[in-house]
Length: 300
Length: 255
Image (cartoon, rainbow over all chains, first blue to last red; front, side, top):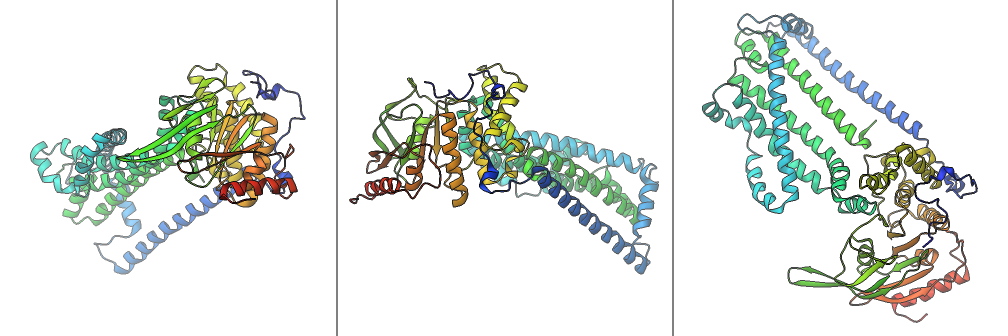
């Protein structure tokens, strides 16, 4: 049938057609002022800058309040913001007398534990979630296990893990993994379940094969939800690692804070907390960057 | 094209006959409206034609070939635009050609596809919005982008499932104009599902009224309105006559 007379044959492009009389849909003919895209994006960028400035002002306000409170209290147990920063810089690259490593090395140790445990936990959780979403039997099998595990605070397992795995790196990684994996499994299942059936059908009516639809529709459609799960479980991972370092470790930021507390060095304890906050903030910023990358509607 | 199609949904021991003995021939280049109340099986029939559902009885052929699953030869448009939110308008339009290329159905390079996508975006009035993401487009613009995405693969049939049902009344009138203009230009065959009598009369060359128990096609009306039509032409005598006749068929009362 010749339903496509008005289009060039397959393989040709429309622009080769010099016929400028081809009718075009003219939105402005109907009185609608089509929005200017670049103007819209500029406005959103400005809104974001304002938001960031307000947020920074909030943090600055907190620092000022701290400074004032410390000055008024005038106590050795509440160093001022400035003193804490000085302590932080002082110990950044030289070891506290009671322990062998400088602050930056403890930060690296904690960060490495987080990255490793978080990476393994995310991998296990996403694979489990994908399997649960794809196969009903696996879902019904694993779902109760996760539901039992999820509300348990991972910290309750610390004594057991020390008995089973000793006080080396293994119990710390395992602890992070059992905190991260269930959250990732649940969020992955939810994200995959939320991919509309019609979105897949739509892809197939455009000529996509099943595999192509899986890679180019289901995965990108589920990614924003999965990244949100990563942000949630990342916060949990920090809780776990600092807790286990407070109790059973010989290095790491948690251990440093414990040491500083034992020697009543409040400034150093604060420094450790600030380092954790900064690391957590940076990692979350990275994940937020990923979230914006996979979900354009969050840009701006 | 559609011969004796039947469909029964089974849930446990409960069986629901969704369609019974539907016969319908849609001619090439025709715009056929399927009109009926909710639950009359019109969407089910459309999805069988699109290949999303399998008929239990009967057969569907498009251009002489039997339908067995979704294919790029039969495009589908939904009530929501179903654009891929992580792709720009241009990349949404390019989804079909690229998917087909990966399946080895064409060997066209990117610049060539881009040029065609931009040309079609221009045709649907989105020339300046190729780089926009779906959330940056208005509802009507999203529907036009979805139309561009469906038409670039040059399907011999477009199945439209209440595509403008969720739009506000003013945007809807504009989309009617848009669709009327696009079909004059592309001359593609369209099956258009709606529960709005006025929409069916305005758009359709013919209107198939569905309903009954078990659901089937009750009557088919020719719409003798001249083309090209315009969205505002809903108050002519011919229009109102056609509308009245179809309403009578739907409600079962005499005209």
